[in-house]
Image: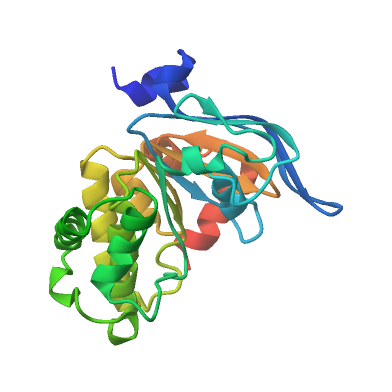
Length: 258
């Protein structure tokens, strides 16, 4: 039995990479997360989908305290995120995040972008940081661009650099916030192929995406959100062939026929 399956069936916190219980969040009077309960097992791959404004990106940003919740609890690898995020830096050491926009430093080369956090946060030596950066750039098939600046790269190449940069911190969990939405269609495949290779390595992943082919290929579970709620959670074969909620069926009919 897989660890992810164990965690979903409610074993001890040690088997869970992420646990969210009763999570509520508001922006002013607008409630954007409503009673979120979610457990993610170690090594599990989750795809979050749903219409714009459904709370998907907010949910994953709450996991490493880029957004603050007002109610409920979040635990990462057994450590509960404190209400004011005083231990957020500790939790972020285990969590890598890749955004819609690549967020690379334009004045640094690709290699320097991948070395920076290692040097400042991990206090890694120059030689070790460079070696790890090159290994991960090779892993995402872009090592030959190491001395270039972000502006000299395509969008797909920049996103692969962003993935390599996150991997340089040895995360146990990777969060992806619509990583292909800012890319031209011809660049989407190279980024998805990189993410599929990560999934094959067994890293825990939560990915917000509308790429349903990726969900079918990689996800252990697909979760549909709407209006701040988790509406449906199922294995991909069930999710796509026999969704149980009308809101899920409507969303799938729109996105698959687009």
